[in-house]
Amino acid sequence: MKKIILFMIVFAMSLSATTLSQFTGNWKNTNSKSRGITKVKISKSNQQLKMQVFGSCSPRDCDWGSQKVYPYGRSTSSNLQRNILALSATFNTGFSKKILVVKRKGNKLVVQSFTRFTDKSRRSNYMTTETFIEDKLATPKQITPQNNAIFDHFPRKTVLKWSKVIGAKSYGVEIDCLHCCKSGKWCLDVKGKAWKTAKVNTEKYSFTYVGAQSGKWRVWAIDKNGNRSPKSKWRTFKYTK
Image 1 (tube, one colour):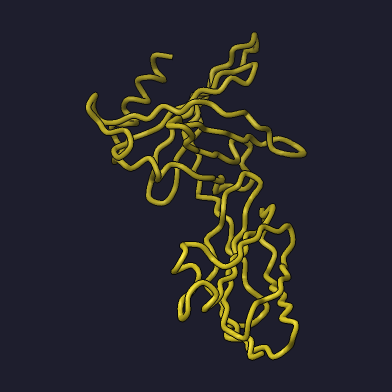
Image 2 (cartoon, helix red, strand yellow):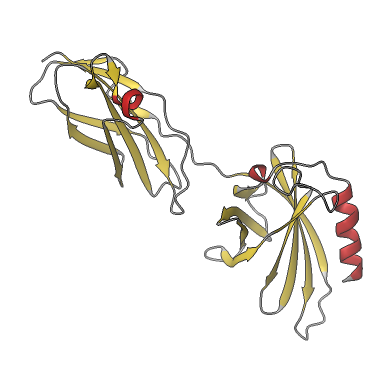
């Protein structure tokens, strides 16, 4: 254990400081065939950092659970929101104890895992180093209607469609209306929110528009943990009657 602590100190001293927000998020192993850690989620809730880890198992990855995360700076006066060298968390598997040390390197996370067996096996304690990239949801690709579409049918039933996103549990949709909240203005600019917002579980959304006027829409993906993809660009449409 003393050797592990000494290594962690040397390891941390070699790092450049980064901010807390650069650690939080969902991360996946760059090696899709890794037999070790496959995914890491670092989050902040009520001023408390948590790390959830998934390890390679069959038929699905094993959830190690969520543990408290400890940030480290260069000195006792370091701002641990803005100047973090590394994070650590400890996981008990039932037969071993794993100390994870995490650093940021460019746009990647480097995770070093120190495993100490606590059962009566004769297996040697060991250390691994793995690299992770941020596992972001893709932005849905808008399919129909095309940008700047013009409609002349009545009633103004409108169907929006977009591509399926891997990892998405649901989708958020925003529709805004020109003139609906104030003449010459979009509702988003007047009230800070769009004319209509919806959450759906399929890759389409139907609604009835109001008035012979312009509208616009955009969409984003949402995973099972509530994480969102970047929003798509706005696409405009117009009803003539």
